[in-house]
Length: 339
Image: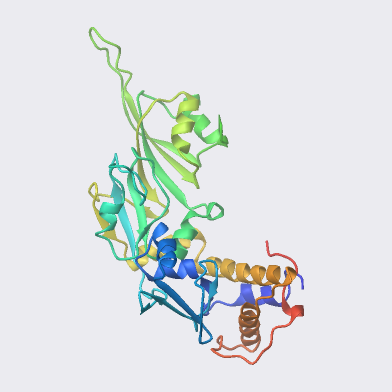
């Protein structure tokens, strides 16, 4: 069946989020305090049990888990998180943006311990960069913010060791494109925030002044701004992120954090293209996996049945049902990937 067939008519037309299957690893990350290697370690230690259709099965982290399946961690039922929290944190300099062991260096584990359970960092900032940094318990929101094609803007304040003007060719090059080892890198736009003129210094090198430049990126590669400044011949002395999408750091103190209110969270979702965009992507991914499994000769009948049931309910103008008598058939699995 072509990619514009019945499945994808449903996938693009359904505005209600059904109970969707998810990988065991994602369920454990979203529904428990486990993070990083702790998820795999818990499975290896036998702390995780999985019951499918009344039978206990091996808890493979890549296995699809359906709402009717039973997952337990240390004997306690694991369920999808129903209440989500998103946090704005003012990252100080000298803090490594990781939850992994950093050999005595400051990292995110300290502030994370005071945040809502299940919070995870959204992206990274290099060790010396300060400013706006998000945490969230909502894995879907984190993924939506980080996906390059969603182009969520991020704004930075650069401190440059020179008095500059907006028409300086090096400043313009930040937007037109800077050749680097990662290819041509560019900013969306720049704006001079403030300039301190230089002044003579008796008995020492001249003071060339200082410029604060606001720069906005859509996406961003590893140390992109630092690479761009170096290649453009600009001496960057400090880098500070002021905004992530519509969320501004404002007057939040260094190393402090606050919860985003519901309106701010919705504004973040809007910046990613909206919740429906993410849900449609999830549905397309499920349909693609079902098709690929059938092409390998290993059809996932449970996944096919779930997609068939939702398609039938949508065609009938009903909410997705809890039960279905529809049997999956090969003809209903798309044969061309969605793009």
